[in-house]
Image (cartoon, rainbow, N blue to C red):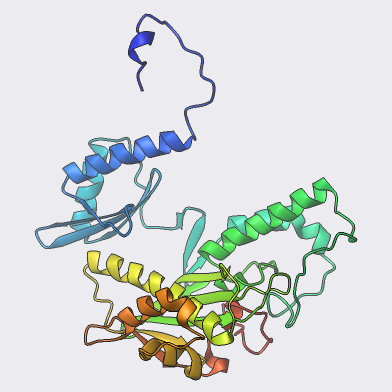
Length: 357
């Protein structure tokens, strides 16, 4: 950092706010680091600007950058060379094989598989709210079936500002779990659990598989539908979403098709990242749905009627990805009881969610 020209005779300056921790500081560091890495022969993907790759003498190293933390994978020689290069321009600390990254812990299981958990966040939630729910009866699923949260009316009493703060804090902590290690909480964000996480059990024969679903007019307040999807890569869940749709849909098929367009955008992004990493995503990538009459017909047929004209943009986008010899997505039917994204749009019965780890 340096003073501007008209400050050249100043001995000191008063900061109006701290330099460290601001968005501008992180941005300036990121630009400097990325320019440095490009000078060292690394290339970036346009799909994900924090993902770097370098190939040298048939040795590959891939780096995922999160502010000033770097996660490296690839050939051992390439990793060592990359760490040496980083050390030539920045102070560094080599932490060894990954055990923890951005608040997530990677635990190796006795059978050789791995499990992604967030014990520190779980402990923080338990410390913060444990006493208030100690007598609450436990559930096998995050939220009871058919239970919904409705918006209060003007006649309902308003909770105190302190209680509102506690509520926002609890939801924020649980949403952090959802983002990194607890996809099963996406639709409910409710239950406190210590031992569950994402089981990392790769299966290289599976490729990219997505499950997509919607809950038509699921929000009783504004009657907007809910989109939910789950994407697996080599048998491991890597992307998921549970989100209220941007507008009111007029039929269950339209709501489902809205959800398909959302997962299609994510799959297109995933394809770009995989191609950058020289990983073949497989063609076509499979999207499983449980409504063969609705979304499969809309995606695979070029006709457009009065009920679908208003969603033509999404129709054309999905059809472009699902038709032709070079299609990248194939939409297939799956039985509702085997639909893995069902819990992302509605509260399910106990026997639908496996007890798993």
